[in-house]
Image (tube, rainbow, N blue to C red; front, side):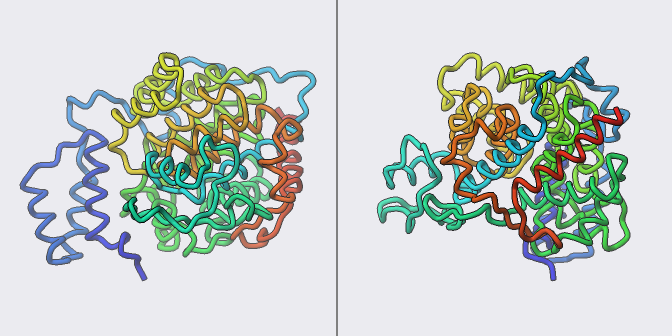
Length: 441
């Protein structure tokens, strides 16, 4: 059974927004016809309109170049280091373990306030005397009566003082299922092999937006990359970006290879900037084994995506704002002013919060994840990504105990056969794959 947001009458509105963001001009007459069919819940007509929208081309005035296949993406990228020399004293296992722990800590920090706006998070924390934030989000019964809010505290198992393990979350599920793909197929895996692993290992009802639609398309025999397009207006949302981490954990110092692996995964469910977000994060993280220079890492991430895409332009703007402003809130206001029109789970605006957190975090673990989570939007996803990067840069031994000790080295997931795990065991398994990649390089 389709959920309300999956039905044609809901999807087509998202598709109109998506096509406009891709530079297409949609005439008033077509919008009137769509609105009339939506009001009548005429699913046959709405599906026909989806097809009409799908064949539109960006207007000549659209200034961005956003290819979708790997060769074209690589042809459109700027110069960059495709492979980096690793430090002679690199402790690979510690760095990988740090990445897993940092990702878990960031995810748990953001989970209770997922999709809350920045000001709502600040108001909540102020009400519970939790500013400045220096620990996990405190659990509360809501807001004071004087504060009207549609946001309800969720993720009680991630609240301050309540955490006994890393609870199940899709941000961690995809990292685990990606590891399973690598262990079974190696780094030569195909998009279809990833998709079939989803069908085998992930429960459909715990998938959302782009991934849920791609899953349904796979069941109906629609293979990648078509699985990312059919009835999928969420193809530039954040899902592929949150799936990117495991591909770069196993490709130390190889940003080009990491971005390619991320592409093969992302094209199952995403297109254009949805894919670029995954490739950007993958390249950045792979480079994190070789340098801790945050700006350099971001520039390396940019070197693996088209130079003239919307995401690259937005990241370059954010880097300038980070340089101009001493406080992250000033940077956030610039991000919100220029990119706040995107959905709160879109790749572009959320990727900018990761960049903001890394730059204003100044290489400190707590400052990085706290800055990121306070930015709002898809807080568990953004803070998991920021935590993954800074955790990999610093390594597990350098991470503050108050942020990682609460997990007691235990993580739960919805991945079949992986419901209960030790975080350290996942890191060791990841290390084994990474070591094989390095040995065969």
